[in-house]
Length: 126
Image (cartoon, rainbow, N blue to C red):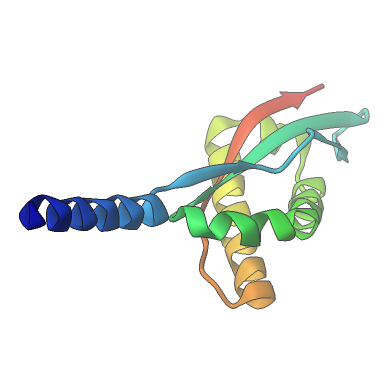
């Protein structure tokens, strides 16, 4: 009887540890719409982004700082040229820059390294 109880407690502790170390995706909310510089005409970018965190405990930290993250992404993306956003290779470089920038921002704001990746879940250039 005692053995079953101890095993149940150990399993519950393992499940709790797994839950706190499981990755989680956090949406940054509504799509961001901004202007891009183009050679001849005004170009718009609509982008939805998500944050991948290494553990689910970081979710509260990220949700607290969503406005700062969105601002950081808008500032980075508004500096890009329309032709760069249309190129898949350059888009990946921009995504990596965004990840580095948001990692630094969250480290400054919360002292944590909670951000694993920034993922662009929807991109529309028009």
